[in-house]
Image (spheres, rainbow, N blue to C red):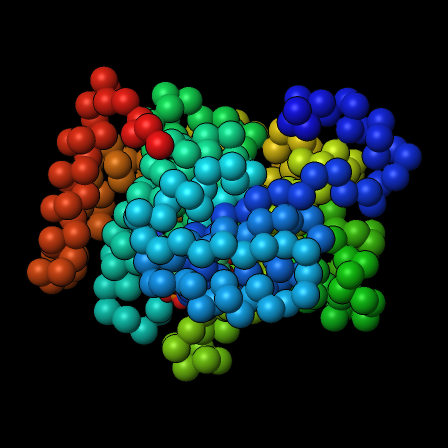
Length: 381
Ligand SMILES: NC(=O)C1=CN([C@@H]2O[C@H](COP(=O)(O)OP(=O)(O)OC[C@H]3O[C@@H](n4cnc5c(N)ncnc54)[C@H](O)[C@@H]3O)[C@@H](O)[C@H]2O)C=CC1
Ligand SMILES: O=C([O-])CC(=O)C(=O)O
């Protein structure tokens, strides 16, 4: 009812923007992970959710029990493994996918390993989401987001023969909060008062901060712009290095994911003026089918894609550099399911000599032949 009653909700909220109309169900997949756990705690503190369904391959019952001791209104329910997918996702308004490996820069063949494992995890989870909660907003946090969002969308196309571009998101809020903090430091203002749009992709070579459109309006010199931009691009690697390669960003990542989920919840409940930058399917840049832009969020997800702002020549140059990387990442994601063989060619490496990964790839190729059956019906719950 609420999803279709946008104009009614807008009127309602013009009287009281803070009124919460409907508690929502959010499903967190990969909830037992380093990001998953603090993310669940932050969601438990939020008044926007009635149910937080936590799902992981590891048994999350203990985590749910502990979270339910937090005296806020939402209830945390726990589900383990594939058998838990249906119950965790049925009725979910938002699905946050943070299952998978993190960017372990020191690991040999890290990108190959990460790509195979994470695309596979996102593929499995998206299959269930497309089956059990096809109307939900899907937020892909698992890296590399530039590849995994296309994987999720391709799965929706295969299972439902339809993907709603307004409801599928790749998380990049972490870059926004980093940019806000770094600019606030330079301006010597509170970070909460700063808003830096981010465009492009979610990786060091594809993220493009648009400092020329930052709020508050400011006149930075070239040196400052370059310094802040490079710091944003390097922030993820800096965290991994500072943690001696043992972990990537966790708490800031959880904060960012929770902030995005809350923004989606506000949009769903008709709150006006909610904007966030995220990756979505779009044609704002020709030939680039997934792109991060500022988005106006509403009860149907993306209410308006605010597009690419006017860029300075430096920002144009950053974007031009980013586009080939982004296009390649998207291609890898899009073809992961439909053309596992092509992924092998693009990412062929020492991983092929590792029996564990080779077995993983064989399984993907087997699944591929299943999902290529156009007559296949989604599993009924
Ligand atoms: N988009 C963003 O801004 C950010 C994304 N990330 C990404 O988030 C992901 C998670 O990172 P961490 O929490 O550090 O990893 P982690 O290894 O600590 O946790 C991953 C969790 O996912 C679970 N899992 C794996 N496959 C699963 C499946 N098929 N179904 C259910 N559960 C599954 C694991 O059991 C584990 O509990 C990584 O891919 C990382 O790169 C990390 C930081 C920021
Ligand atoms: O690289 C990672 O795993 C975490 C990440 O997305 C970031 O720090 O921007």
